[in-house]
Image (cartoon, rainbow, N blue to C red; front, top):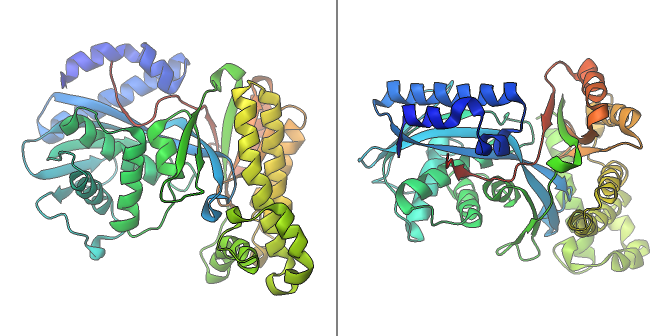
Length: 429
């Protein structure tokens, strides 16, 4: 624990090595981040009357390779980004957790009752309770603490604000009560467990792992109960490219559109079922092609095209990792574009056929190709049918790219990011 005055002195207006690692080297950005922490520490002191605190940061994440591969036990490539959720926290000597997030009322979690409460599904308090319940169950210490949280991972951006929050809470409990003994991967697994069991939402492990571990990771879900997580040694910042995530809007919650989204894993699995297995990871492309004449009338052609996409993107993750580890960034960019084309042509998650006149992702990809062809890479980001696209943009094209996309999608729709090396951490200043 450290006094707030001492922490502000160490932060030094953002002019320190850790802040540069988390937020880049732009002086104005670093000063804004320093002010952000100072304001949150001031809020904490005025709310909880304590000036002896710890600081925490947890990044958002971006999917870089493997689009709609995880639900058929495939591979993904993901990275932590420099948009983060931060917390000021301290033990309070009670059995109650008190959390106040900027813009929201305080909520409390009583640690004396850790049972699942379905009436609290889809609430932040249920996530916190689930994380503590699971940590206690596997042998970690838990206890009451106070925290003020401020989030810069936009909700609905495809950057996984909920997973970032989960592993932020895990990191707080880990460092306040367990001397930081819990690994990043275990923090991710506990966050996922809480989301599945206490929050009431089924989810994979990619989001939590990318946020918790940091840097670039690849995950192989061949055995979904024991996914293999590997860190990828590559420094994105040194390439001179910015990772730009653009919020293109769109997407619908009506039943027809929800059915469109649900058809992706369902159709992939229908092809697998015709070949006698439950998921596409258990068959090869050659086996699928061999059976096309016999199965296409049962599954439909779109299902076979989606199976073709799965096989291509699943292998592409392996090839992307190899390119990055060999420091061949241009080969990597070429595969990002290939993945995007495969999503468009074969996986067909770019626009919703129910609302075929609304093609926000298609238009954004066309504009991206117009500016970046031969100079960068672009693809759909995440689930598709609206939401966000991803682009890798060289410095000399960055202003033109942002201006072009924001001309259509509005000022502030482009998020200029980089892959940060640190996951969910306690700040050691």
